[in-house]
Image (tube, rainbow, N blue to C red; front, top):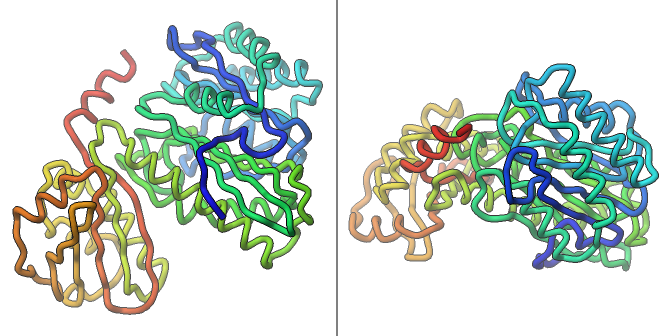
Amino acid sequence: MELFEGGVTAPKGFCAAACAAGIKYQGRKDLALLCSQVPAQAAATFTSNVVKAAPVLWDRRIVREQNGPVRAVVINSGIANACTGKEGLEICAAEAAAAAAALGASPDEILTASTGVIGMQIPMDKITAGIAALVPALADTPQAGTAAAEAIMTTDTVRKEIAARTVIGGKEVTIGAMTKGSGMIHPNMCTMLAFITTDAAITKEMLQKALSADVEDTYNMISVDGDTSTNDTCMLLANGLAGNPVIDAEGEDFDAFCEALRAVNTYLARRMAGDGEGATALFEMKVTGAGTKAQAKTIARSVVSSSLVKTAIAGHDANWGRILCAMGYSGASFDPEKVDLWFESAAGKLQIVKDGSAAPYSEEEATKILSESEVTAIADLKEGEESAAAWGCDLTYDYVKINADYRS
């Protein structure tokens, strides 16, 4: 298995296009279309927020209730189509109808996704005109995938895409993906959209099993600001064009697929955490020596979600008491007098806590380690063999500025 530079058009049979439809933004791409040349199996996970945007409701019906094939996804940025009532669902239906007519598909084969300001209505004429322009522009080139990744950005500062290759049943299988996410991100899906494509031949049941399990250890392990969005969606489409023997049960082929999927989603989860609104550093929390996986995950997520820890990282301050405090209120049980803690980055590794108390260390060296663009804290509980990692970012003045001015 190898990661390589690419995106949603990397697997066989997937095309994309993007344009500036003027939905909210002016002079920048804000509408993307992702299409499979043949009907694809679809799996998805959605926001845990009780307030769900219209595209989430539309997609849940298609993926979970109808269980039918999917041909395309229409994605807009700028307006979330959330808290928009009946009109919001009518927008989804209009988008699906427009894309289906142009592609020769059924509206029930078209998924939709939106990201942006909550409460605003999407101008139907602009989005349908944009779809009409996108269909003839569909291409399977890397450039088309990159354009789509750029079109779904809101406050993101960089596009987020990657691809992976692996061999299954003697055939090369590719997974490509793009995500957006920068703020309103918290575990249990985050403020994110993720679109994953693969040419693997795999049943819908096994596709959903792979995605649901992987999201728990990737996208559900990142936090920027503690807010869970109304629009969070992760889609995985598989069109089978790689020609591998169909994956219909657990085993070596399923494991190979899951390994590639994990590599793609871990890469993108880290990219989203590091691109948090106003962030200057990716912050990773590793918990080792845990008695159970659940214990390790709970503690790791608690630390990366702590505002006090995040501000310490922003100040390059080795305020390790904040980390132990966040571990302590996580809800997971552990013996604080056994905990060892290190800080690590490209500048080195330094133990700052031994058996729950301060270890002798240089504040100057700690500051140097914490001044890198990627910083890791490692906590050893000394209870067992389980481990987990969570990802977040520092919390800076710019986060407040970005979100205070977001609607204006």
